[in-house]
Structure formats: C-alpha cells, structure tokens
Image 1 (cartoon, helix red, strand yellow):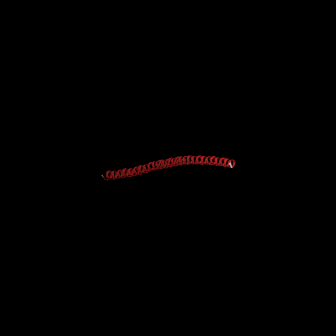
Image 2 (cartoon, rainbow, N blue to C red):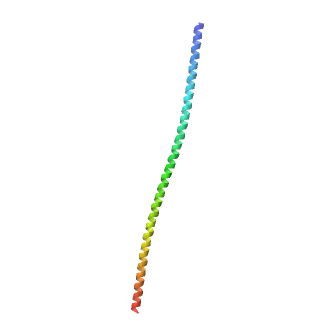
Image 3 (tube, rainbow, N blue to C red):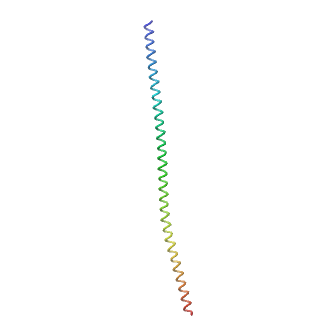
Length: 107
C-alpha cells in the first residue's frame, strides 16, 4: 500500500509539474501574443502616418503643378491682353491721324 501511495504521490507530483510547465507555456505564449499585438499596432500607426505623408506630398505636388499651369495661363492671357491693347491703341492712333488729316485737309 505504501508503494502504491508513493507511486501515486510521484504521479501527482509529475502531473503538477506538467501542469505548471503548461501554465508557463501559456503565459509565455500570451506574453508573445501581447508583444506581437503591440508591434502590429505600432506598425499600423507607422503605415498610417506614411500614407498620410504620401497623400499630403501628392496633394502638394498637384497643387504646385496646378499653380505652375495657372501661372503659364495667366502669362499667356497677359500677352493676349497686351496684344489686344496694342491693337486698340494702334486703331485709336490711326483714327486720330485720319481725323487730324481730314481736319488739316479741310482747312
């Protein structure tokens, strides 16, 4: 009976050790899972920030390009307005010349 009690006690001790080892494995796995979750969260934040920065850079580039195109269009418009003003001025000078010529001729 003592032998069977001793072997039963040894078996219980072995089961306790096995249970403690299993608990330690679970605790390590939970800690590893927690750390992995933290890393994934940090990575997600970095990716989100990178995406925001890239989106902002693309937007700035588009705005710069639009500004350049608008500047070129304004320059073209100013040249056209200048040409029209020149034509109007020439016509006015021509008309004044003709009026003056007619006045002088009439006298």
